[in-house]
Length: 181
Image 1 (cartoon, one colour):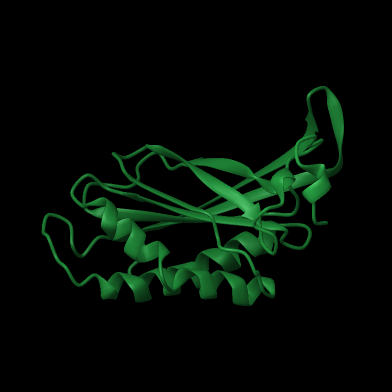
Image 2 (spheres, rainbow, N blue to C red):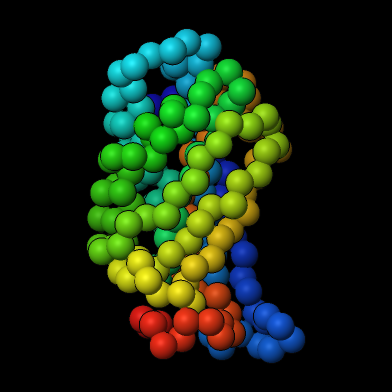
């Protein structure tokens, strides 16, 4: 696989709303930037991107897991397609094979992996949605991590992101009756 760049981002949330987080929550995101083989053209069969999404997903999940201090509780995925491509190119990377590539190394995940996609210029940001890996209705785990890579994606590239977290929102007060720990 031809990967131009991998960028890894980590944030540790120690407090929210003036109250210490107990425990601290760590969110990580790994972004991989690859050439878009369909930039500038309309192609109905995007199946080559299905396999690329799975392969890149394995690599990015591995990078994210290396820096997450505790077990994965929440996950998400996203893609930004450079302006020479179209939105469907990103979704071909995100679906249908990326989920398996993410779930195997984290030891499962019963819930759908929340996702987002868009077309954007280099430096565009995207809010990668996060949700509990086993309970899609765990409100305290509805969250997001914002990702941007300054020079990516270029017009003929796709930036795909895998995001993992070891908890939900710190000091969550909405939906606690539905929470899964």
